[in-house]
Amino acid sequence: MPRPTSLPRPSTPIVIECGPAERGGGTTDPTDGGGSKESAVLQPAEDENKYPEPTMFGPVLPSHGFFIRHARNIHLNNVEVVCIKEDARPAFVVQDVRGADFFRVKAQRPPDASTFALKNVADFSLTQSRPLPDTVLENVVERSSD
Image (cartoon, rainbow, N blue to C red; front, side, top):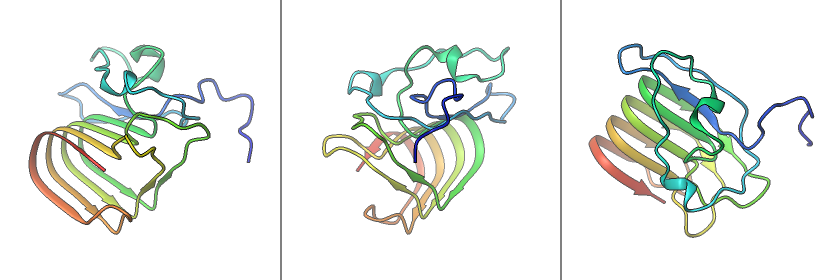
């Protein structure tokens, strides 16, 4: 199904971002794909004084589905991330998060990309998200997973 032409940035992932003290979130439209391996390692700048609009992070973010940073108790259920074009970025980038539960999530990915990129994450769980195995992690400094 084609996207409405009024959406401003169809190549931007959904963003959940707050300043470390605030712990809230914001969203935008999902991606059309086409991201590179180089963009997968980008570290978007932080600005605690602004609402987290995707455009404030630059033209490209490190994920093609969800970029989640400085959040608590994130629960994603029955979510599917699909790209129109192949994308070399992870579907989910999760940074500085306490409590991240992913249940029945699916993500399209090329063979050489990760589904998840985790950095400074505590209390992470992934269940019934085929083809990925059920996973529970207490503390993650940095990890990518298929």
